[in-house]
Structure formats: C-alpha cells, structure tokens
Image 1 (cartoon, rainbow, N blue to C red):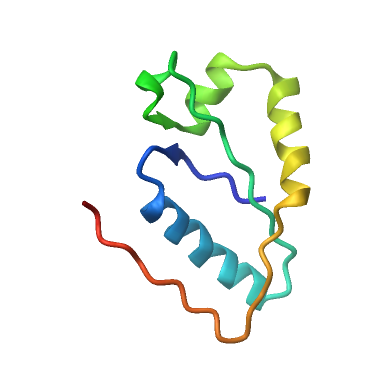
Image 2: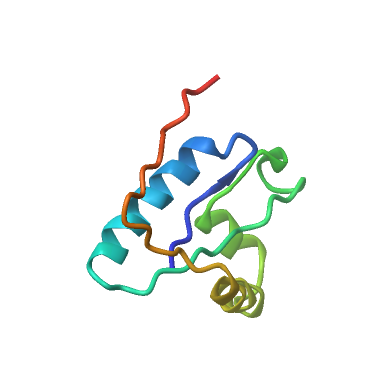
Length: 88
C-alpha cells in the first residue's frame, strides 16, 4: 500500500507515487493507493502527511483508510509512461 502525503497541488505527489507503483508492479508486487484526507484543522487544510494524520486521528480511522485502498489498485500497463507536471 502506497500512502504518500495529500496536498492541494497533488500532481507531483501523484507522479512520485505512480513511479514507485510502476517499479513494484514490474516486480509483480500487488500495489494499492491509500489516500489521506485533507482537514482544515490540520496544516490549514493544505497538506496531510502520515505524521499529522496519526497525531490527529485514531488507529481505527487509519485502518479504514488502508482497507479502502483495496478499491484503488494500481494496474500495470506495459507502456506506462507517467509525465511529470511542472510546479506552478
């Protein structure tokens, strides 16, 4: 399960997560995406990292996010090319 930070400007985070997923999938590792929620009460709602999530939410809520990742698998595509978007 890949669980990167969630940010308002998500493109570069998505790029890095997909890059990691490609490598794992090339090695036949089943790979899923966990998405942390943005919360206006944490870092102004602009970013949620795993440390902030664990400090502000329960183990059960984290377990629920991990369970939900089962519905978000990365699928290996033979000619998978992820283009990095430039930061604005």
